[in-house]
Amino acid sequence: MVREAGVAALLRHADQRRGKLTLRMVVLGTWKGRPVAISVRPNCLTVSVDHPAEASIFSYDLEGRLWAAFLDGISYRRGLNGRIIARWRSPDNRRERRWLPPDEALAVEERAHQTIVALYEAIRSGGAPLKTPLPPEGHTAFRRAIAFDTERSRADAKRYHEIYKPIGILPPDQYMAVVLQASEGCPFNTCTFCNFYRDRPFRIKRPDEFRAHAEAVREFLGAGLSLRRSIFLGDANALAIPMKRLRPLIEIVHEVYDVEGLGGIYAFLDGFSGEKKSQQDYAGLARRGLRRVYIGMEIGNEALLRFLKKPGTPDDVIRAVQAIKAGGVAVGVIILLGAGGRQYAGAHIRDTIRVLNAMDLGRSDIIYFSELVVSEGLEYARDAHRVGLEPLTHQERIAQGEAIERGLKFSRQPDAPRISRYDIREFIY
Image (tube, rainbow, N blue to C red; front, side, top):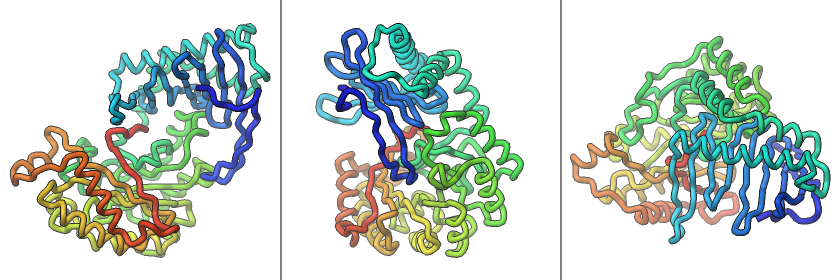
């Protein structure tokens, strides 16, 4: 429902993420006898139209791309590649999701587009009286959204695939980042539970190649760059790039983008392989905008890591985290719930608690609990069947995460790290 208070509000709110003051104008009105709220921000246009049951909501970036919608009780998110995921709650309050086939995704975009076209025509003709005039920025945002029709959407998705190799996964707080693929693939690519990068060898882009890529991404995003919240250096293990080659790539990021204005640089590190960077290395990277490093530790049990074909040991991860944090960079540590099934469940809890407690994590850090998702054909599924592992249920995986959380020495301290859930099935960029 439209919940904006007052006739029209010009709201100032501090964007704590970037430390900037952001202006948002909310214009209220009516259309076809229904309340309408139009939110005009420096990074997006959001339109809410009330219906007898619930509102329809559409959000566009300033290039005109639909990026979020709410229709008939279903939430939609559109990725830059044109794919759309639908999410809703079942009658028993279970979280459901479905990736829309291309034709259905375009139909959602077209329904939103038709609404925006009709509403804007009504605003201009007086058929949708507004309590305060739409500002010039609002007119520009409407016109760009209207210009982004089905043909433009298809062309935009095609251009995306020309610029990017498939982006396998991102941390949940980086779904709205600018992804720059300084490297492609994964340097070891042996983990049995992951098939995100099996289609390509690991390689590091040359500086001239990376510059062309970074500039192409900037041009592709256009005015939609304002919606992006950070820069994510991809792919799976960009911080495994040796410092001698990494520094020039970081400098290119600064030359092409306003790194500070975008909220800094973030990246994955496996924590086990690649060149081991020192505290001094991370301090230098922090000075050039590195804010957080995400490490897929998965499990604290060494035997289970070997079963998953993950290189290295839990102590390797502890040392990597200590070097990162000593250099002034935050970490995000990813834990894989359910790995090893019932046979390893106790050891997983015990050893993961030990390793996390050894990391001295604080309020700027994040622990992600990600449930193991086993699909047909995954190497983990074959290995688990071969040795007779009994999988944990969803409820047991959740309980495993809760048991780990209870064992953390900092779990109730005011400066404790944030603990969050991470469902890879909902990843969208």
